[in-house]
Structure formats: structure tokens, C-alpha cells
Amino acid sequence: MRILVVTNMYPSEGDVSWRGSFVKEQVDFYKKLHPEAIIDVFHIKGKVSGASNLNYLLSFPSLIKKLLFGRYTIVHCHHAFCALLCVPWFYRLIYTVHEGELNNTSWRSRIIKAAIHISKIAIFVSHKEFLKSSKRNKQFLPCGVDFEVFKPITNKAKLKHELNLPTDKMIIFFPADPGRPEKNADILKQVQSIALKKNNPWVFIYGGTIPKNKIASWMAAADIVISIGKYESDGMVIKEAIACNTPILSTDVGNSRIYIDENCGIIVDAKPNIIYHSIEKIIRDPKKFSFGREKLIHLNQDMQNVTLQLKTIYKQSIQQK
Figure 1: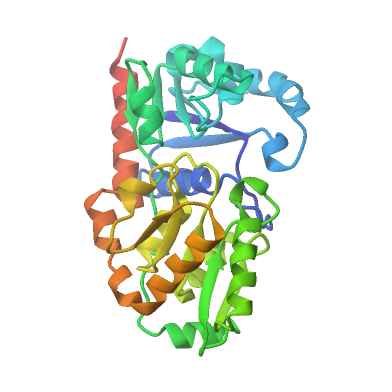
Figure 2: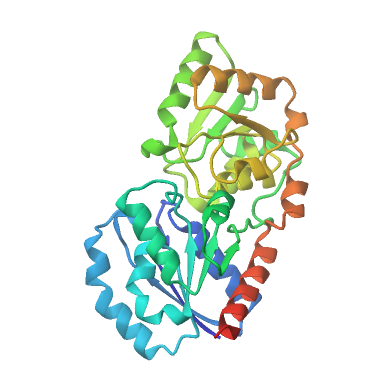
């Protein structure tokens, strides 16, 4: 089986940005689990990766050359623009829908729907979008979590010390880049101001400059992980925190209601007072919210199970006429 992955999100060595790390992890784990497969990655660095959307047009000749001479069995695209560029190969096209804008009427929504329409199989990472779609050949398959990387620790104080964090204070970790307005870091900073006025011994840590390969340690060391964005397609941060058995606070976005229950966190409105009081609730009894990992295992959200399901989808695509 020869697979070409076409994506506009794919971190490279030395890239602090997480954009597309879930795509890279999926590719790497597939290669590890199925070494007989040949997987090439064609990365178009568009606006989402900090470059220009003009690169979609500039990369088109190289992409067509690769598609013409690569003899690929499967073309797996991870963005609507990428899928549309591969439209001549629609009979081999699998499109993973990471976008969550299908419920609006904007031009972006129309592009996503067009990409879904031309694909042979559409894989949705959002259960809400999966249920909404009228696509006949569709699958629900969120990206998996590497349970060997994201895992609970027995000595949180020791890990805090290694990360130069205070061991006598509650660490509240916001893994996203605060420079991305859709992640609502400004709301958490209002919570931080409330905590400061009340002399709470809380330390707020923001992401954006922490390399992806260090995030698991920060997740495990934190007392609470915060994910209060305006929208998500799935919610990788939620799953990664839960895999570490670290309590999570999240807005009702993506698949948060599938993953979060009373054993691992609280779903909140993105309002400073509500978030503040929810943090207080978790801090009063943190162990109560530290038992989410088993649920993720039950939901088959580990990387190995997701990879096996992806292989089944690939085989299904090849068998379909």
C-alpha cells in the first residue's frame, strides 16, 4: 500500500508550533505499526502554518507531479484546500475533516462541504459534524493519543521541581498559544486577576513557546489543565490531559462531552467567574477529578486502536469500486 498524505499542517524539527502535530503523530505511528506501508507526506505551508495561502497555487505543479508518478493507492488529505487540489484523484481520496465550520454559511463552509463531496471517504474527528453530514461514505475517527507519552505520574512534586515550578502552589496550565484569540486566553487572564486579588496560591502557565515534545511533562505536572476555546473539532488537549489523569476545565466544544465526566473535569461557560469557581471546586477535591484515563481507553482513543481503525478504512477504500 502506497499512501500520500497531503496536509497544510505538519510540524518540522525545531518548530515550536503544534499545528498539525496530530497529523505527524498519526503518520509516525502508522509507519511504526505497519512498516510495510509506504507513506509520503506532501506539506503545503499555508496561512494556518504561518506562511501564505498563495503556496497552495505555487505547490500545485509539484503536487500533480507527485500524484502522477508516485503510483499511490491512497491519497489522504488533512484539509479542505488540500483535498480540492487533489480532485482529479477523487477515486482514491480520503479526507479527514479537522475543520468545524460546517454549521455556518460562510465561503469556508462551502469549501469544506465541496471537499467532503468529492472524497471517496470522509473521516470526521468531530462527532457533531459526523452526525450532521449527509455523506454516505463517512467515518467517525478522532486522532489518537499516545498513551506511552501522555500518562499519569506518581510524584508530581518531583516533576514540578524538574520543571522549575513551585511545589507549594497549584499549577494551572493553559497549553494553547495565548496569541490565538479563538483560544480565549484573555478570559483566563481575567480569572488570573480575580485569583490575584483573592491571594490564591495559584500559578498560571501559558503555552505557545513550549515544544510539543515537552507538553506531556507539563500536562502531568499541572494540577488543572484549561481548554476554553471558542471552538474545537475534536479536543486533543482535553484527551492529553485526561490521559495524564490531570483534571480538565473545558468549554462545550468539539467532543468535550464525550470525553469529560465527573471523574475527570468540568465543562464550563467561557466566563471568568464561572471558570474561577470551577477551579476552586476542583482544587477542593482534586483526586475526585483524576480518573479519566480509563474512559479514554474504553473509548479506544489510544493511538494504536485509532491506527488500526485507520488501516481498516484504507482497506475499505481500496475494496470499494
